[in-house]
Length: 137
Image (cartoon, rainbow, N blue to C red; front, side, top):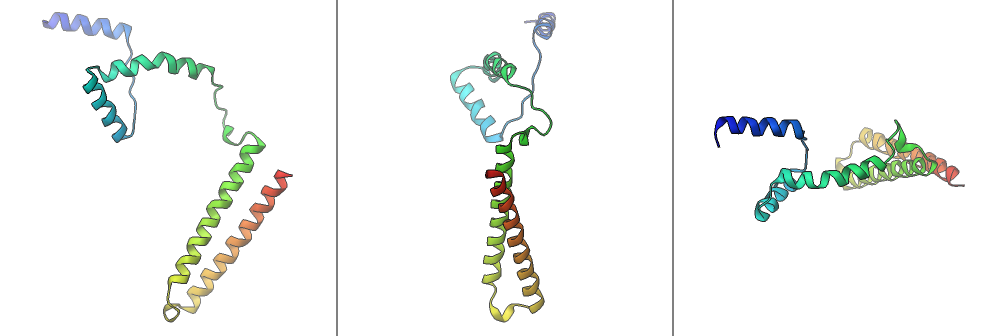
């Protein structure tokens, strides 16, 4: 194919197609490329094949409103529960870390600070659990 034919083909493609760039996990992208090569199909062709179906699904979805992640009471309760679980994990990790330090290497000021932070975390957990239980009832 000559230069003129390539230009015509490029011009024809530009008027009928739009380039879409995607970002994917590198391992998934590499696997997708290998599968396409093994099947003898182009990655762009395979992605284009699924676009109409995806667009139909996307059109049916309501656009997400700002702050929509916490739009329902159930979602807010879930968020409070997740914060509580995370704080409990931090407290437990801090407790385990503190217990691993031998008694003879513990500085009194460090121990006081750690114990105070553990007390404050416990108070915060109790407060969050109270909020969560209040919303449950």
